[in-house]
Length: 328
Image (tube, rainbow, N blue to C red; front, side, top):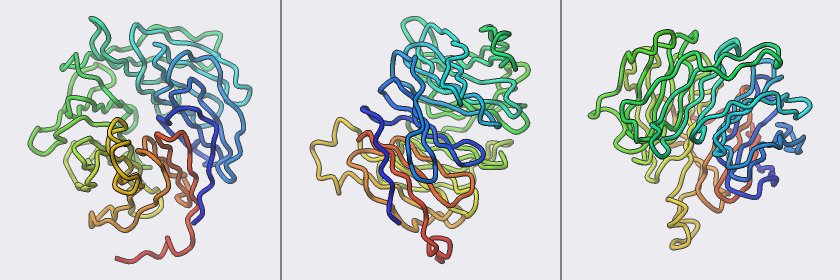
């Protein structure tokens, strides 16, 4: 399995996202320019220029026509995927950390960081079919009970009925997307012990995977918030993803960027580790990054995956045939 090295970012990667067809890969980094790549050969197709700070997150609509990005410049922007034109900019009074389109792309959930007196919040925005009709008003704003702690990720639950969020207070919460009521939250005993860094939904929205600085990734039921599995990594987890094809989860991380220079790059454990989803056992690893892995994504066809690191590279891996025959 030879990786394709994609160099287009000058700063560490923050997020990777495939479109639904799996032919395009969007990457976000701290260098202000989200980038679009061809997912089969790793060629750079174009960039989206307009942000003024690190871009933390992105999502693409089901028909691959719209891109939404959240950035440290205190905006979330809507883009035309094909032309690279900026369609709209949602302005906030603190950095926009996470963005997620609803099923049907009529709504988007955007989280904002705590900043000065502002507490961390989840905003639901209506997305207009015609960019001319787009307004910046929030349909719903949810304040985090632990207001000074950042929400790192918020996504839509099944059928857009709920919103699932997780962040620095290590607690996962499920909110009612209509009323904004807090429906469930995880127990300190079973949940993560440190900051939740990443959250990835299964293809059918029935369960989701979270990664945390407590060196574990956990699999949860999306409706009941029941803990299903725990995967132990040995290093802080920055990124998680699930195969849509096989029962595999992939976990990436490595020790904090500030400690990287003090250790050998082999000791830093900057590899993407694959685990059997059911048996919770490690089945292999993909090395290559010269720093912590910050982003992971599986192609929707399950035949390739990509990773983005602190080293500014995106590495695209097409699986060999023997990957599909791994037996434990």
